[in-house]
Amino acid sequence: MKLLLAFMSLALVLELYAADNIWSQDTKAVSEQEEQAAMRAYGKDRNISITFDDDPVVKDVSDIEDNLLVVGLLLGYGSSSETVSNTTGSYSIDHSLSNFRVIIGKDFTFWHEEYTEPTRIYLALSYTALSTGVNYNSWGIGIKESMRYWSLYDTKNYTIYPTLFYEVGDSSLTRGDQSISGLTSEFGASIVYERSYFEYEFAVAYNSISWDHPVDGIKDESTGFKAYLGVNYRWMYDD
Image (cartoon, rainbow, N blue to C red; front, top):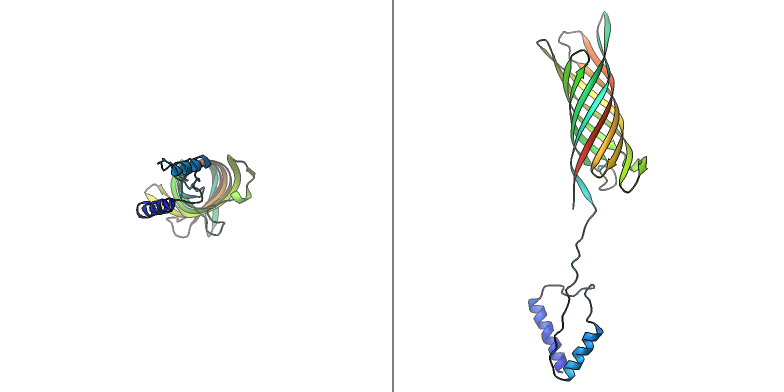
């Protein structure tokens, strides 16, 4: 009877003062030695101290990550041809070019498997220098599909995969006292070596610019191919 009253008193104290879910399926049972010692002490009407261990604290660590931001720097080199034409004829000028680009974007899942985030929406800012001495600035909004799901080579530490991208925007230059802008589009493909949050990229692209020539009736277009080398960094966070 005394043992029953002791256990009931202990249960009441725990109910009033202890946190919820004191015992769980992970709580360790009292050892057989401690149980026998308690019974012997009760038989001799003596007190005994029993230590109850708390449940182990388990931290739930998720391996799911979301992309916060992507930043990238790319250097490109290529060739371009500018064609100026009117109703009577046309002429073309060929030149080489070098290009510097800054990419700011974010990865999304959209229609793919949840949390894979292979589709990137980005803003591209670039500066292009032509061998003829003409320089122009461009900006564009692009979409890029990082095809990790079709990886060319995949290990625990890194993966190699192809991408496709397309962007549209505007270019502007100054010739003499004239400021000229032009609708710009670019599409291409790349091979990416991804390790941790870094992407090392080699890309080839076709670029076209339809310039608004200051003289009415004259069509001015530039087309060309470029090759890029660059690196991107993906800022991530997990939940």
